[in-house]
Length: 639
Image (tube, rainbow, N blue to C red; front, top):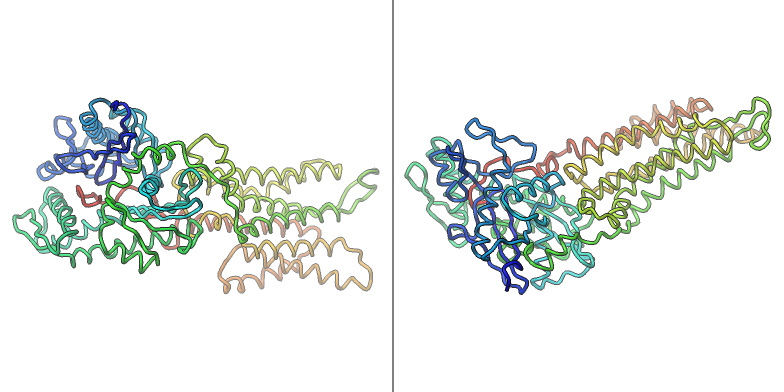
């Protein structure tokens, strides 16, 4: 067996780093560091400029805490200062990776050319590029980046778990923090449908809570003693997996007894948050718990029985603990079949929208066609006709109807944004576009482009059809949709840069209330009928009533777009509908259409703010799904 055939897989986590070396014949070997399979990710920058890694860093933390960095895997934008000296976090992560590379070379006998790095599924292009730079600085070959839940799913299939094509699974990864992902198996790989992360829902938070409990009676004096206490708590927590109670030495020289009761008390709120995160992720993937083929728990905290209880009671799912949960992701990345499939990217299949989503796409599209059809059909020609124009030829047009047709065409395209994204990803060679965040972002931008193109097409065709200058048509077709376009582009930027999946999923976010579309469209159709119908004496009253009803309906449609609670709708609908009904006329039809366009833009802005920027119930996963831990992790507690 040539050494060059070996594969090196590394999972560089916030709290600890694991790595395995594997060969094509199925043999694999975990790399050992100081006699253990997990290397603490912490580093210590010594005064002479050397970087100590692993347990050596934790040992030095007690005497030199100012130079200790427990979690060097920082955000690319974050600045790091050690002992008043600016430090590049890339150098610190590279030190850990360099030690892993050296151990792999010692085991294999030569440099390993095939390297795979496990990364969180929620990481965007910037963090992935940052990790590649760290590997390059460590002297590693160009690595393949494999998403952690995809690696876990690939390992499950390789281990014989029956997951048929088209099935959905949840990977609940609870290490230093928590990341929950919903995956769907395609014909040649797994696709991440939704992923949510919370850095405060893992082993780090549990260790901090335990340390705070044990430290009440005899508080630690200084950062050095705090790091020593966290190290002891991390070791004790692991030992409680096989014991009822363990003795924890305190930095002051005394000792306390830590039992399973205290551990469960500290872990309960943390693991309850993991269960909530699981429920939110399933909802974001737009499936139900009954659709799942399995829920699989991995990570250093997965062994805790309380996690299974929390998931069963809160998320209403029955989890399965994967054997050797702390290393399953890195083993999956090292697996030949799983890694190769992940490296080239799973095939992206275009989803078939369910009936509810199909209706949300079809209703504004058909409404737009109905309005533009009536717009052409009911135009009133003066001083000639469309073909034989006389002197001072002009046409009486309902500009508001053109504006609403353009708005509804854009809304129909945006409702199909996730489908458009999947269609583009099928033919894209770029792996970033094949990610869920990339698909959503590209899909929204494609929908905006298509919607603007349709609105422009309406204007161009109308100008040519009526043989009039194009300027007025373009103004009424494009200006009303401009605020909506800006809001949609803002959503696309959020999806691309930080991948914040809103509650209910992206398809729900991109869909304007169907009731508002139907009501406003019916109102404008009735208004145009009342303005253009032949006013025979016995029909005048009914034609006028139809126009007032149209104004009422259009006002109600505006309110339905602005607010959701029924009470607020009732309060606002009465005055606004009456005003709209009172001003129905040729001149006011354009104003009413602009009101509706503004209402839709406000609806988009409110959704962007309440569901993405500032969710109604703020959670760490929604605020920053791939944020680094806010507290410093212990050496082995996070897994």
